[in-house]
Length: 455
Figure 1 (cartoon, one colour):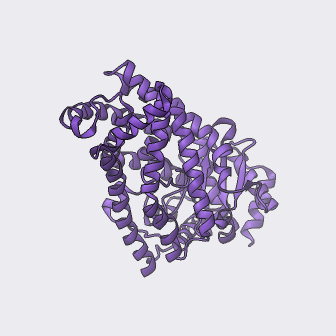
Figure 2 (cartoon, one colour):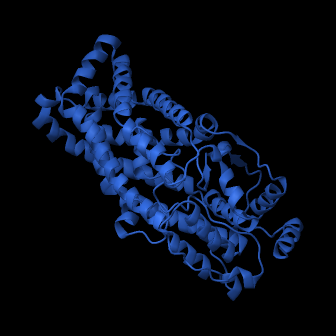
C-alpha cells in the first residue's frame, strides 16, 4: 500500500532519490518482503490449523536486512541533500533565470524550470539509484536485470516523471500566487483528484511500459481464482500475470487501479514458486484489499498526510525565506526556484509523519490477511506461504522497532505467520469478521475444494 512519502512524490511528480519504487504498489525491496501477498486454498480442518514455525533467518538474510537499513538512511540523507545543495548554493535561482530566458511566459518558465531541476536531481541521484536498484540486488542473488534493461527502465522513469511533473507542477504555483495564505489547503484539495487519476491510469498507461501484463497461463488455476473471487463477492474481476522474472527472483502480488482499471496482479515468480493452496490464499489476501476498498482508504490517509505536510511547509517556509533569501536568490515562495525548498521541507515532514502512515498501511495489510484466511480457511497454506516469501525474498521475520516504525508497510513476517497459525474462528463455530461479505461457494468451487484436499 502507498505511504505518505510516495503520495507526496505523486503530488509533485518527483522521486526523491531519482529512482521510483515499483509503482509504489509492492513492498519495499528492503522490507520483510511479504509483498502484498498472503496465500491458501480450501483445506481440511486438521490441515488448516497445523502450526508452522517461524523460521530463523539466514545469515545472508540478516546481512541484507542490516545493509538495507544503512541504505535506507543513506537514501534519506541523499534525498535531503540534493534539494538542500541546489537551494543553498543559489543554483535553483540560476536555473530559474535560465528558465525565464527560455520560457518567457509564466507557464513555460515553470515548465522549463521543472525539466531542468528534475533532470538535474535525477542525474545526481543516479549513483545511489544504480547501487540500490542494480548492484545490491545482484550481490544478494535477487535480480535478473541486465544492465541494459535497468538503464532503459531508469530512462523510462525519467520520462514519466518529467511528463507528469510538467503537467501538474503549475497548479500549486498558481495557487501560491493567487492565495498566499490558503495555497496549502487548495493544493491539498487538488492533490486528491490527481491521486485518483494517477491510480486510474497507472495500470494501463504506466506499468505496461516496464513489464508485459497478460492473462494467466495456467487456465485451471485461473478458474479456481475466479471461483474464489465469486465467493468473495467480486464479479468480473481482472487477474493479470506479469513477467517480473525478467527483473527479479523475488515474489509478490498486488492490487492496483481504480474503477474499470482495478485489477489483481500476480508476479510470474510467485506463481512458479508457490503451490496452488498458497496462490489461492495470496489471491484471498489481494481480494481483501479489493473488497475492503483499501486503495481508497490508502489514498484518503495519504491525502490527510499531504494536507498536514503542506500546512507545515506553509508555516516553516516563510521564516526560512526571510533568513536565507540572499543565499537562495529569491524571496517569495511563489518563485518556481522555491521548488527544492518545498521538497526539502516536505521530505522532512514526511519523515515525521511516516510512522503514522505506515501504521495505517500495516493495519490494512493485517485485515487483508484476515480476509484471506476467512475466505480460504487454510491456515497452513497462509503460514507456509509467508515462510516461502521470507526465504525467497531474504526477509527478517522479526525486524527492530525503528524498522517497523519508519520502514515497514506490512506487519513483520513473524506476526503474520503466527496470526495465520492462530486465527481460525470457523473451527470453533464462531463467526468471522467478514463472513457477511462472502457468498456461498458454488458447486464447482466445492468440487474444486475436494480435489485440493486429496492432493
